[in-house]
Length: 198
Ligand code: HEM
Image (cartoon, rainbow, N blue to C red; front, side, top):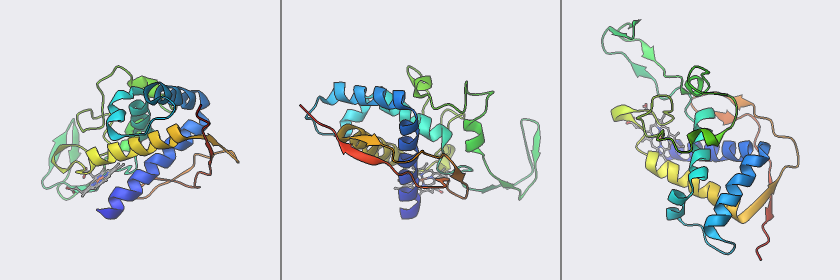
């Protein structure tokens, strides 16, 4: 549980920052929303998240493109079963490729673009009700850490964006390594610059 709950959170945060640093307009919109909400000398607190729809949309968009558990956890069919015309034999191992679902052009417009705007004004969420976006799984074995994870990632991102501007010493590459969890192949190197508040 400890590994499952830390690695996934830090990986999501790293992808979110990598996407924002390579999409400066999105970064600027996020920082403007935060500044309007918190002013210049505020403190970041958990209830602030619910007042920041663009930050929430950034977190969802990061989960869509970079689900930390790309195939969820393996399942095994207990009996022969037919689902939507596909036959799944007893004892077959079943993996759900949420990474591919998140990039399916039949489901998402401009699937490879990082566009948090796609979630604004929409009900769609990561809570297991919308099958096009299930980075935590769905149903009775859905990740029990979901509420904590969404709050932690949002709060960490909010703190990083509120307290600092960010510079890139080198170009960011978005290469991925696949395993049970999905990571950046090369760590993000970003330099924080303290925001001047006056
Ligand atoms: C970004 C963060 C996280 C993501 C994307 C994530 C994703 C997942 C996924 C996909 C599963 C498998 C669901 C399935 O079987 O279909 C899972 C299971 C689980 N997660 Fe998370 N998780 C995250 C954070 C956490 C945290 C913070 C905790 C604990 C504090 C946690 C605890 C667990 C546990 C105990 C299970 C196994 C549940 C079971 O088999 O019944 N996870 N998680």
